[in-house]
Amino acid sequence: MSVPEIKIENVSMIYEASGENVTALQNINLEIQQGEFISLLGPSGCGKTTLLRVIGDLLQATSGQVSIGGKTPSQIRKEKRYGMVFQNPVLYDWRKIKDNVALPLEMMKVDKGERERRSQELLALVGLEEFQNCYPRELSGGMQQRVSIARALAADPEILLMDEPFSALDEFSREKMNEDILQIWSQTKKTVVFVTHSIPEAAFLSDRVCVLTPHPGKLADIIPVPFPRPRSRELRNKAEFFQLVSSIRNSFQEGLT
Ligand SMILES: Nc1ncnc2c1ncn2[C@@H]1O[C@H](COP(=O)(O)OP(=O)(O)OP(=O)(O)O)[C@@H](O)[C@H]1O
Image (cartoon, rainbow, N blue to C red):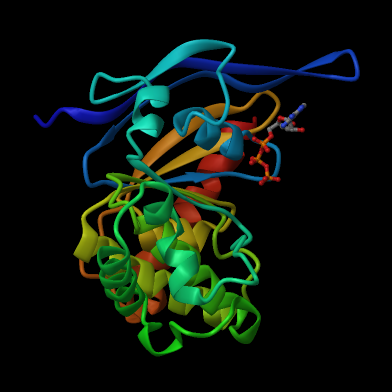
């Protein structure tokens, strides 16, 4: 059996807001394998972002622990082994696309030639090579999100943490991005933790879907996705896809009762 890359043990997170305690996560246990594509799925407020942030060392859990190949999230972050993509692309308007992508390399003091080479390679990977000299405002929302994916990959991290990266996109762009992210993933072989509240998106992308239910945020179920890879858009029209979507939906209802 392979060794899990990310090990989440008894993680709980309690926020204090206006004098009240909010249990955002309660005793979460989860192991994520190297190279796995895993989704954290659930309705608003079930703790998906909190869990992603705990994994990525942006938040300290109230109790429990996360280890990544035996190291703490803080060590992994210092070693720049996380790439992060958020709901909004957060690009610098005054920097060209290629310079936005190269930013993490600039911070790592990688020399200019190497930065340009890597930035071009990544822009080709996300299908934006010809836009490298454009500014963010000249790109659509979907294209901007591609830039932020390229930037997240710049330092060649092992783990990609994605927080509802496509939820601001229209349905057509979102489906296209779903297909493209699978292709990028198969080429780069990253471990992906992907937050979403879309059941079809989680079913289409993932190896396993982690169903979270709110108040308190609990891991209600972990559902393996049996569809072979590579997956293409035709999968979405298949009876077995509808069946899986419906069984994931039912697991929510069971988790909520
Ligand atoms: N900084 C904070 N202070 C207090 N409570 C918080 C804080 N951040 C999150 N919470 C609460 O913790 C719970 C989980 O929030 P979280 O953002 O992790 O959920 P989510 O599933 O990602 O939601 P969404 O899909 O809306 O982004 C919610 O009840 C939220 O109100």
